[in-house]
Image (cartoon, one colour):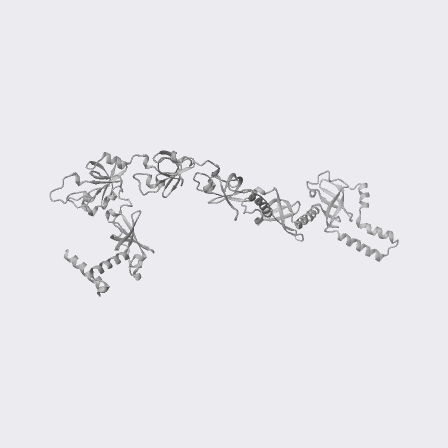
Length: 618
């Protein structure tokens, strides 16, 4: 209940009845009609109070509500929680004046419906509208995420912050700016709908532009700055220098090899960088971190002289070799050919693993280009040299047959190397094709060393050389002219990709193969026991209309010319090239178009001669 003093004060503050009292004082007699008009005027004035903010007096306090009189027919009750924490207990005293919003002059219970929260919101709207007109920055707190953006509290008024207006660049994680005061700029206001749209990005761009202008004014190459890693890409990291971004390329992060910037940097990390390039025209800034450290290549010529041995760690493996760190920030390449004396044509990851400690020898050093060529096999003794020293030409050796091919045997030698016995060196009397069938893989065989070529890493062996040639036997050697190239496979164990010429598999040779598969792009052919060939669709015939795979069947034999020998014992073949070559040979032997011979006649003559030769040879 209101006190007597409050009632007395409330009586003095009654704007709803002041007009009526003044009218009665000036007009002593009031008619019924004039009274009714005056009453309507009085109530219409009351209704006009709705939706406005008026000052009211606190006339009562309870634990839950605050009773406020604004001079209407009755007081209004406002929940105490609407006064918030900013208006403490000392401010809520009977007789104090507060601003309230008139929702209704008379509610369902006959009391005025008042709101302190809406009054405060109206005050904020007035202030925000002034700031919006002046394009001034406002302070707000981002308190929740909604579809498409965030809700922001602007001191009582709720605004919407679109996701595109949060930061200059898309922000994946906004937890760092949640529930903390942020400077914002109002983009749009609609009081009728109660909508406010704000932007944090606009404030950042303005601040960034000012800082950028100040920073660029004093920017020059060589200056050292501090910044924060803003974004990481495959090729480097963008560093925020305080209003301007610079690119820190992956090659300028460290003297050590770095495959990805994330190996050395993290988003948000503070780093010290040096400006290494600055383009004033497009204002692009290139930064470096390793430039702040001592160049490890200084003095490398003396420390890593050719022939010196060092210990290092494998840092990276590629198809062509492995990179080994032999010093702090200094890496060298061990080419796959320099990894092993005996293991050829295999991937480097079969020999070493990342992080493995290895010993290497410096093969070549280029200080200007910062390149070091290293070798691993040079650390150990060359097994070919050892074999040549311990088993000179003419000596005998007993070893295990490691592989059997169509052209000979491979015998396992000390040091994980192989020597080759060509089938012509198996027996004086038995043909090589028959003699080779008497041997099995894993058998022990005694051989004589015919030749050791350390440079080409091959050893030629012979079984028949252990005995004297019988009377009338034709003494052949694996160095005969018709087999001059076959010893290229002596270190191959039957699988060296560089030895195709040993059994006639060289470019330009004509071979007969069996079709093993028919594909859309061509046909696959097995040549002998060790080679796989492929004939492209366009090479199936010199006649375009015959370049169809459906003309062939699996198991059919075809003649083709080798056009290329690839790794992995694969051949590129061409029926077309074979037909063209035969045509040219026939024209050269039996006539030309200039002599009046037709192509059909020429080929017919060539075919007839071939048949006659076949008949003559029985």
